[in-house]
Amino acid sequence: MKNIIRSRRKALGLSQEELAKRCSVSRQTVNAIENDKYDPSLSLAFALAKELQLTVDELFMPE
Image 1 (tube, helix red, strand yellow):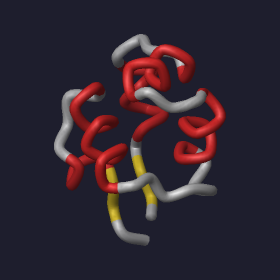
Image 2 (cartoon, one colour):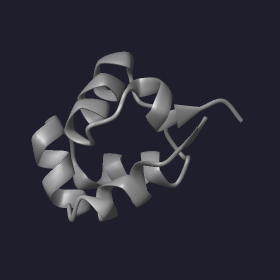
Image 3 (cartoon, helix red, strand yellow):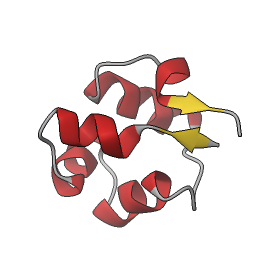
Image 4 (cartoon, helix red, strand yellow):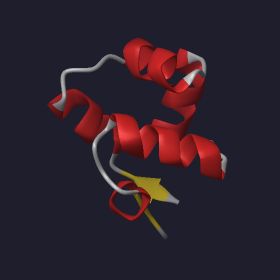
């Protein structure tokens, strides 16, 4: 599953660490998701979308 987390996070001026704290996960989890090495749970996908001010559909796209 492709995503635009990195570009959106940078556009909002957030570090991986800050986004991770806001979503209650580790920085490594955010890094793995950004690099398409890990698909988040549904609850984490919604948390990421909320923090990045997008919908889940806007944030994640099927490959």
